[in-house]
Length: 581
Image (tube, rainbow, N blue to C red; front, top):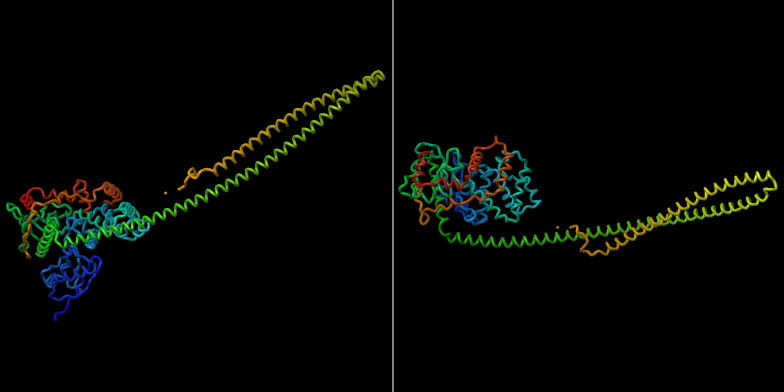
């Protein structure tokens, strides 16, 4: 019995090891791997996929289904290594990729191709794609999810090396876009990512080195839409294009490849490949892409219809679940907001009570101060009245003394005649008495003035007391009014033959609708981001393809405008153009 051979098949996120027989064909191996994928992750759209291996020359190649595995140039190692990868790409991911698991497989493979620069992507678009990666992984932006991306690789090394921006500055720009996605479902974020990447010039293109009859080195690009010819130094911008709708037969003989157009007046499109194995790969890819091209333009098979129906039902179910979760989240948010509002109102109420207590304390303090001032005024008034009484008594005493002196003077005048000497003395006493009376009069006037000044001060003190009492009364009225003020007036502080294949075109000749498509990522914000990144770009680190992309952007060229331009004229004119390159 022949010895079994161990093989390992890896998908983008899983790995399978099993044994095969030396007689196992490529189809048997593919079916076995597909069954594993179907059982484990439910993948049914297997027509997009193939088994890729590294040949003995180090080149990537696709396993041929109609040949034995061991007869193919698989690199001899134990176990034999195969990758379950996307082999054929759709024209419109949103319309053709039915299952979420298929979408995820495409997402992971294209992301890897961009990160390794196998597919060129301009810096500003990588930022936008990174935001959809975040949405697809973490869902709606939150402060908590933002912290998770600090250690995640979100951008290609090429882009990081070309700009003088820190990880935090890149994250800021990614988060700005992430926030714009709102509550977009993770599955929808994957589709949006794929819709943007399908507009990239190198998306889904298999490149092969070829020569024309003049031996000019060129590239042949095989993709979902047809065949394109590229300059040797430019894989971004094709020079000539032939859609599948114009191609009738593809064949090769040794290194010579011949493509027969549907237009029988047009000459055959002939090119040369440096290696025979390349012609086999080209033919296989052309057949597969053309088959899918035709399938897209015909009614869906029963299987596809069933898958689409299941996908729609699943989408409706998820939408209902998502809406229920959103409502639940909104209810939780509302409850949390209500709780915060209540707490705020309680805090406000406590603050108002504290303010009222402070006002009452201030009122009590003012009353005490006013009472102290009133008592002081009363004391001053009593003291002033006492002094007035004393002044009045002194005045009375002086008056009585003056009258007594007058009487004495009168008596002295009667005794004038008795003694001259006594008269003289009395005269002197009289003069002295008059001098004393004058002094007393002056003292009386001074006392009266002092009394008037004291009375004036007393009146001023009484007026000041009345003013303070009036101010106190007004403060009491304002306090009472603030306590009685209605609540609405209180301010609120809160818110697949091997060498030839005839291509059938029944019912689709002339279909070139893909030329009228528009890129998904034409936005003013993306243009602004491009300008922003240009300011932080190190021109010395610009790659050849960065410069080619910038040149295309300056001339307003994109994938679909270029596609329409390179297909202009009839088939003969484009074949002639190719021969003259």
